[in-house]
Length: 174
Image: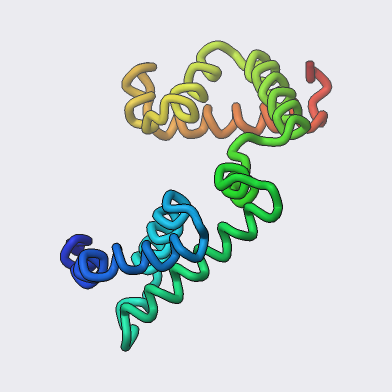
C-alpha cells in the first residue's frame, strides 16, 4: 500500500508556503476570516483528491484558483440562504431505505420466516446454518451426523420449498 503522506509531500509544502497568503486574500474577498479559512481548507481538500493537481505546472496559481472556486461556492450558499451542513446533506444520499421500501422489506422478511416455518425442523436448522450462520456443508454435516452431499441436497430442497411458498406455487403456503 502506498504511503499517503509521502505521495502528498507536495501538498504539505504548498500548504506551508501558501496557506496564509491565500487565506488573507480570500478573507478580504469574503469579508469573513472563518469563511476564508473554510474555503482554503476546501481548496486543499480538492487538491488532495485531484489527480491533475500533482501535475500542475504552477501549484500556487492552481491553489489560488481552487480557493477562489471554493469561496464562490460559499458565496452561492450564502446567497441561497443555506449553510454548509445543508448543502452537504443535499449532496449526500440518505443511507436509509425509503419508508415504502422498508415496509416492503419487513413484509418479505415476515413472509420468508413463515415459509421457513413450513420446513421440517432438521431442514430448517440446516438452512439457517447455511444461509444465516454461513457454515459450510461439511460443518453442517458434522453437526447433524450426515454427509456434506446430504446436507447440500436437504438445503437445496428446503430453498425450493421456501421459494414455492413465497411465490404462491405451494398449496400449503401461509
